[in-house]
Length: 164
Image 1 (tube, one colour):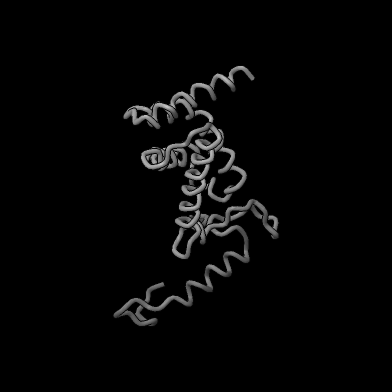
Image 2 (image 1 turned 90 degrees about the vertical axis):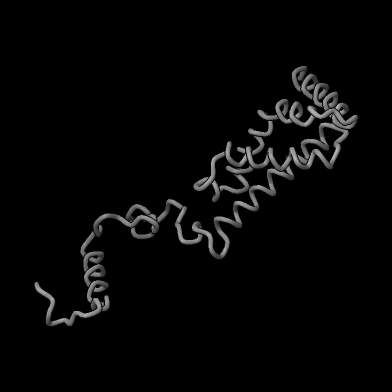
């Protein structure tokens, strides 16, 4: 508990410097809170935005959220640790929402990928971005050959000119 109150006391002091216009206060505040914000980012990414974990890593999300936080501290002057961490959590959440829109929006690559690990046919899940190098069973081979037969002929070639 002492460490927490020491952390909060230091943060409150730095927030006072920010309020007085100290140009280095934003950097000091972010450096001071970085490890706690990394833990908060990890928790939010793993629990609240678990689908994103396939596409994004904690430190990447944190870095972008810290850039947002740094910009917002130029405008907003929190007066307490609670206000500061509320603002930081808001910036992390905004970054996660933007990433979710990027990956899972109408044109996002995540829309076409299956991220769960369960299947109904007993086979391991497929990553549709990189299909297996060869079919898994006779049904897959059959579908493969049926799809080949449906392909259009290349321009300038007739089915009779194809060599076997």
